[in-house]
Length: 493
Image 1 (cartoon, helix red, strand yellow):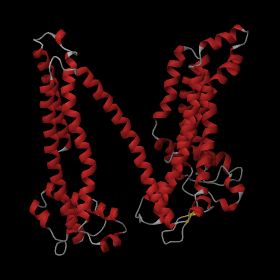
Image 2 (cartoon, rainbow, N blue to C red):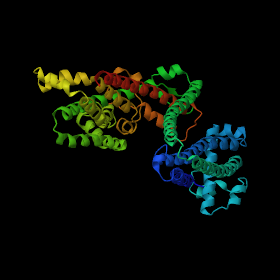
Image 3 (cartoon, rainbow, N blue to C red):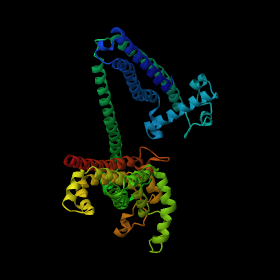
């Protein structure tokens, strides 16, 4: 049964549980709601929660665990030589999954029946061309070990889906019956429902924490594999970035880190003054009517996709800077440069700085302004000497949050600054030239993980080391920003 239908059936049973629980509770009180311990709706929600929540939790756990079990059992029949030939077990299993999906598509399209899909052999049938004809993405020749693993994978996946459907629907029915039997006028439904909601909230926060932990651990494991093949000293202190899948790579991080920080600095030099001045005007000088129009117009910038900003940098800003500044001053004739990406990224960051700073400035108590006016200060003096110092910690937090956003940007950098790493060996003049093309950590993460790459090679695993480094940097900025904002709130609220 498709997952959507399972969820809809469980929700339907939950609705039945709601109605039955509420009806049974009222029936036990003779229709008089005053005789119930809790409001009638609590008995209904008790039935709904006991029917739906355990069933959906079982389905989620099944979907998390079952694929790993199925893949392990399907991979057990693949020879070690085949895994070594394809590079890694994960690559082999990705091919197995694609082959299994192609077999499903062939059966759905009618080019094969189920028996043929289960008994097909690669040694006497042109399996690869048949599966490609279905529209599936088959990148290599499908041989017999891969085909057999895919056939076993299909069978186990279908069986797993059937068993999951039975288990989930069965648990939902059991929960419905149990909730119906517990619904009585003396049953403390409100207490149980509130405890259940508390448990759901705790589970949601735990899932968020465990997801973050899983991301970090996955990067840590792959980064450890990278450092087993490549020196950490050369990675952290190397001055050259030149990946070469033939084994002669130089994977120094400093050129990418410098490009990231340089472009982010230019972006902040654009976004912070404009965004802060806009926030001061909107909060202190603009009329309510103008503010109601201007603030949403500024915040529209935050909703523009980054690919649009990238095209703007490539087609408009880059040629303008080249024709008006770079070529006349003798800095080159390339449209890709640090200043191009920085300017466009700064425009993108203006609403982040402006909106957050505006909210922080408005949070400064009006009594502080009134006291300043009472002492004879003008409006500009009040802003400079009272409002901004009071809001400064929050503004700094907004700037740091914008900085972490700039560090993680990719598309604007690709189109505005290019994909060439900074040439640090050429000296200080080359690396501080704002009209030179540079790239960032995020761009190289994408480039190292795309294309026909060997996921066991250091040239690919370096992407995880770069990702972990970027994660630590942005996490530090976010923690610092939250600390400053929290300190601000403790002081002024």
